[in-house]
Image 1: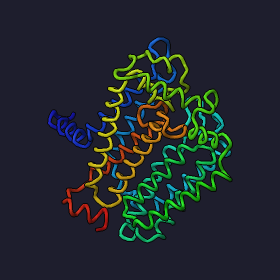
Image 2 (image 1 turned 90 degrees about the horizontal axis):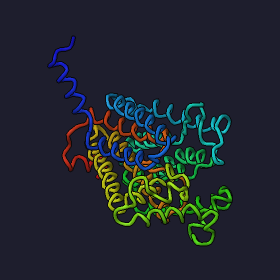
Image 3 (image 1 turned 60 degrees about the horizontal axis):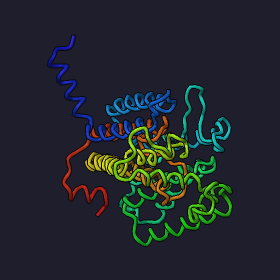
Image 4 (image 1 turned 90 degrees about the vertical axis):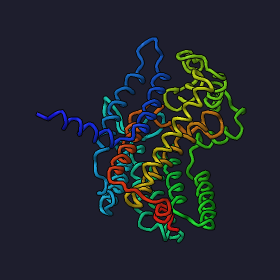
Length: 382
């Protein structure tokens, strides 16, 4: 049997390994999402399933927190992860289920999996590996183009499902990690020019009519309030009607009376803002700020550039999802079906988010104390 001292040492070791501020902020957001999607009247499918996904995600978080992730530095492991991701995305076009016009998930009966979510983590790991070996040479445009080519493969396979929201997040992860890796300003301009040309090509040759209509509706939101502009209009109404203190938990008329569609997923921020008001929105923003802050703090002392870049990529992942979701909920960005981390319903994205944090905690196990000037030299190559 274990002695009391052994138990205390084990508990202390476990406690010291976890960033409890980061974990607590994440759990507060999950709880806020659960409260928002619960009707408090009848049984709620989304609420009950989300509790299960939350428990699974938390278990995964703690398991990964004690894994030594130095094996991810191996080129062989990275190549295997990348090609496995490509194969899985290709299999979607053969075995994937169509949901609302998109073939983007595998249905296993009791649950379904949307591969685009965990593949975002693969993209972060891949780019962290690529740039960690070439961060001093990153000013050379060749490395920008080569890394962009690999990520474009994932982007394209996700885009043609079609899952425009996830594809955009993949693109933002690449762009953000290129920027933090030390790209030169002249090459940055080149990247934006190339991006504009790619978007132009996608508009004329790849976008589906409904995707074009969403963008046109964003530019002229009042032209089709009963059609493609309906969701955006109802979302902005929900956010504005919350005012300072909100309508109260369970009293959101736009969401609970189903004027606002899919308020458990794509428009959960609008539903939350309606019930909690400006005060609740400030609290949500504060919690996301804490999460980004703690991710950066935990990653900046990474053992190598790989761990530092992974943390940077993870922060970009959360920021991209946050901006895209909030932007489309308040009418500043087109509707892309992007979830917001921890708040929105969904198992795939929730597991991915806690898995990302768990990997970060695992990397924190073998982190090092570094002087600020050493970090600048190691991370930025200056």
